[in-house]
Length: 319
Image 1 (tube, rainbow, N blue to C red):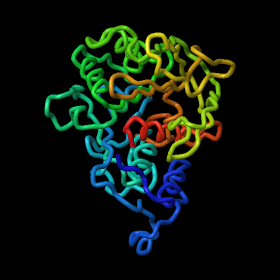
Image 2 (cartoon, helix red, strand yellow; image 1 turned 120 degrees about the vertical axis):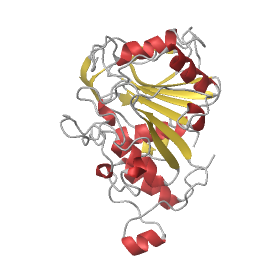
Image 3 (cartoon, one colour; image 1 turned 60 degrees about the vertical axis):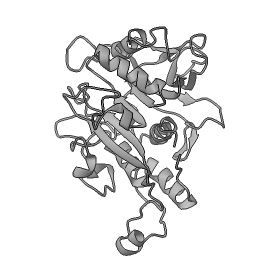
Image 4 (cartoon, one colour; image 1 turned 90 degrees about the horizontal axis):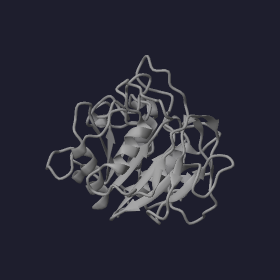
């Protein structure tokens, strides 16, 4: 796999994670002529990341998209420089990845079906990582099987849950129930395949802290060191290492450890990798479509949320 290769590019990535400003300059023509630094080396085979918008990710007050231009955010702005270059509360996440030159990003638009192995352009087989930020529509039987086969065969799945009773589109399903349904009724492995379950809780506020593990690639990655996150009406996870010994809690709610109160969890299944976050607030960059009441959790000083999201994306993509 291709990695960000130079110290300058690595520093630029870290600063992107800190708010997409003050980028470390690199010795490129773009820097010299425009003053806007770019990644030093663009991978010929970038890591391919698909963000989901097929499960009502913009229902109610949510705006969990990287851009309103779908499937290709570059149609909105081919050279994004800040989160405002693209429209969506996850635009900072998308722009940070795009600015490294190492990622190719797409969105699965509303009305689409999640598939694996069909040959369609947005089929999961064409991507390294699939990000599902707070789904509000239950996955169909075929979609659950597609998700599991994708991970089993080497894909990365990034799930973001929210608190219980967070049914934004009033269809009777919220993200904790939807994710638990995926883990218990998927047609591939219904016996707790990832080694965790989503707790049916609504935790009003907390600042979860990272475990002490200097070797973990999500906590200590190319985009910086993760020390903590924020929890603003979210939930936690119960770990079941007897079901899957690879499951690992990386951040925990205050006073919790071990198998309970985990806020950010990683695991593996088959040849693939999984990460799950207990709240959508940390990924919210405070910008998005008009009419949504958004908050800047991405840069909240109580956490290192940008580094966490970006390092986890890199790990899932095997970057």
